[in-house]
Length: 352
Image (cartoon, rainbow, N blue to C red; front, side):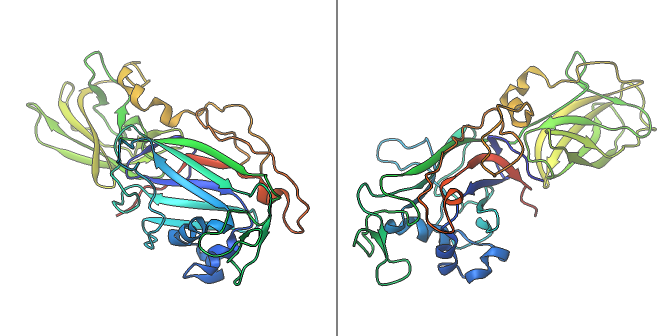
């Protein structure tokens, strides 16, 4: 399940989607999968070589705003060849590629990820002011005018002179968090003492992740332990499978733990009741830390750029870039329209 959002919970998978053509041949030439990348994808290092080849005029950066003094900002480690850290998927028919990042990997970024860390994302086609791209000795050994080699001047091959195209956006790394519904005045989760009991709540963890809720005794309540799977929906709410608490007594106390992938996300106190009152079904005030993570109010309709028929999220800062049709056969609009949905997309959390 993929969900658009701009806050990314640590350990989730981040997907950056870019609509851009004219680069897949280079990626294939530098990939261990050759032209099978269309079906199988490729390691991030293929994209790294494209960016490092200055003459091709393609720039892609994912950097945090945490650079201080001589300290370089934390950045996406595109040079990695481990497909488990960063993976690039290709949709040649639609002219789109996806950079899939496992944020739980210590090697996906060249620094540590921290709660509240803001990242800037930019994708650019760079051109020369005066000269168009010319081929050098090899198929990808060219640049502006007659330049070639490692120090070639940038000139994206399928755009005219002085016609740079770029987009940028942002995302934020946040700590995984969750809250339960049906809190009483003392912030205890009300649990019905009966059969077919379902517990619900909200979380900023990616929809589709494998979650579960564990309920056990607390205080003087006789010992018990019960665990049920919890499904995380696209709006950030979660709901457990049915518990059987028919043997519990009213006013028994409980400890409740919401977990994802075997790791604890949050704990809460619970109290067994005869019937759940019409209490606050909305998250408590301290949910402000991640209430925007599952906001589903759409922003203005995005430009018709062919990336996604769904509206961008309210916090999406992607800019629409109007292309310049330079009349190159087989290219034109598709290569110049670049739409990047930073982080506003999350896929399945890493499964152990």
